[in-house]
Image (cartoon, rainbow over all chains, first blue to last red; front, top):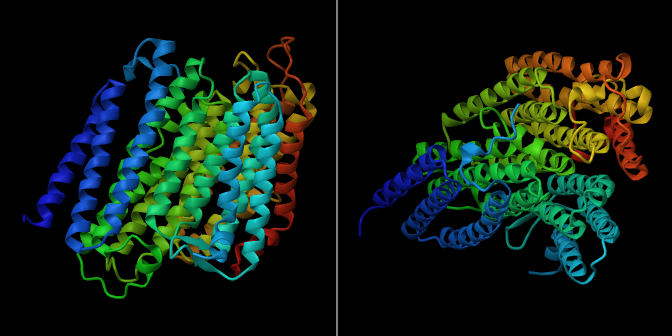
Amino acid sequence: MSSLSNYLIVSAILFMIGASGVMFRKNVIVIFMCVELMLNAVNLTLIAFSQFMGDQSGQILVFFVMTVAAAEAAVGLAIVISVYRNKETVEIDKLNLLKG
Amino acid sequence: MNNTDFIAALPLIILAGTGLLILLWDAFEKTPSRAPLILTMAGAIAAAIVAGINMTGPASVAFGGLLYDNAFSNFFTIIFSAATILTALLAERYLLEEEVLVGEFCALILFAASGMVMMASGADMLVIFLGLETMSIAFYVLAGLFRTKTESNEAALKYFLLGAFATGFFLYGIALIYGSLGTMNLVAMSNIHSVTTSGPMLLLGLILLIVGFAFKVAAFPFHQWAPDVYEGAPTVVSGYMSTAGKAAAFSAIVLVFSSMPAGALAGGAAKIQIVIAALAACSMLYGNIVALSQTKIKRMLAYSSTAHAGYLLLGVAALNATGVAAIEIYAAVYLLMQIAAFGIVALLEKETGTGLNLDDYAGLAKRRPWAAFLLAIIMLSLAGIPPFAGFFGKYYLFLAAINAGLTWLAIVGVVSSIIASYFYLRIIVLMYFREPLHADDGIAVKENNISYIAIGLASAALVVLGLMPGLLTDATGYFFK
């Protein structure tokens, strides 16, 4: 069994891939996928801690995170659809009505 | 699990239950009516009364260490309920005129309120996370409530993407704190005496938590979404999420930070304080300076809300008993001011979405003397001019900062308040001493007594709390010396 730090490093890398995807990609759907990647990276961290510390609460939180991510996806994709109906695009650059 | 657990959670159960009831009612009743709004208010009033009764009882932790039932949690429950009541009152005209789904709106603000109550009373980071998400998901939908308006869609999308991004950071922070302290329970955490695990991981966890939290309260430099979202979202919703949502995030962060075991951070505690103090100073200065150059009132209020997040962060940076009480007081006062300000904006907004520029407020005193009078009180209070409640709120926050040895931060706060008074007072000058730039174009907004009652109540509360600040300081359960 590999050590705790291996799991933590993998999940930190996944988290950073997700975070940089959110910052640099332009397509809303891709950005949303990157957010999901961030959440799942955290899930990996939680499970690793939970396993190595012999404490159950981390794994319980993972179930809740998955539930919340599903709820977020439902609302988020609904918002994306309503944007697409009005603007016919989901590129974040083209959504620029609101500015100072 | 016993009866006392349920009594402790009763405000939460009432808010969520009323929301579900409204959804059910809405499925059967097709004609738009005021019934959901009345039901919302009844639910929120009941929740506030139960919280008020719980507040007088002894403090406890319900559900095996998951929910706090103490003065702090019940105080916040009462102000969230008050925000819900004010929002429902203000929404009456706005919603019936804009022909959106009243039932859904009411259910969503109640779900958001129940999420906020979970954040303010969570004794476990799991509960705080669930509360945060319950609130945020309801807000994403509320921001996009006007499905056919492109602005509203865009606001919802931006809020959703950045909110979900912030959730990632918040959650990573929770995971690292869990990993370094071995528990997610705040009660267990505060009882840890010796910390064996590494300090840097805990420090990193707290920093990530602060980043996620700064996104949610729109503190500098994580505020960029706020002006866009507050401008595009329905005005009443902007008022609700910029006040109650912010207060809820502050209550959660105070709960987490005050549960950190003493000595866990060793030298890190001072670093965290510096980070928060820097966020506070930058938010106050940036928010107020950028608000000076805004020409649209909703964007101006958004930048001023960033500045107010800065004032509240001052209390978090201090993190002593005075700081916590000052956050409670300022959260309550800020909530009244900002909801009422957005309420007036909603009242003067035209159906076509115009009437939102600062120029439109020129000569308002002649056209709508009452609206101008109430807005003048709110602006004076936001600027922090005595005898209005905004002054005492700021006073206690600055006092907390000085008590914690952060005198420089209090000075930055005072300077930024002086800068802020320029744009708050400019609105009063526009309303009272300028001629209207263009005559009222005929489609005058319907005068609405219920909105006026709500705004009048909030303004009256600002005056009363300003003259008798003891009412609020007693409720927080701390004594100022």
